[in-house]
Length: 127
Image (cartoon, rainbow, N blue to C red):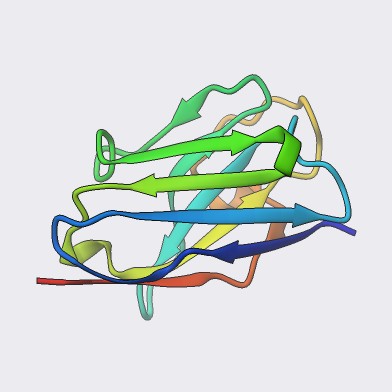
């Protein structure tokens, strides 16, 4: 059974940086499409970064140039480096993984694409 656990959230001032980590257990996740999502109170989850099995990355315009997704296959860990943080980045952040390795997914930033989710880690950015 795949289990994902996020860490690295916290409070930071605007302009600061945080690095989130997502450790997978129960099954190797290095060749699967994985993503980071965030959720504002009362809103649906939205994708902020994804990386597929070949290492291709995708970002929405809202974080492009500020957030970087990466993975360490040896540690079975996914990362999200967040720089130049803004108060509007304040949210709960989740990592997720797809069901099928190597499959093509048309919308890698949609939460509907993903089957496994972590419990989330809170990021708070103060002005």
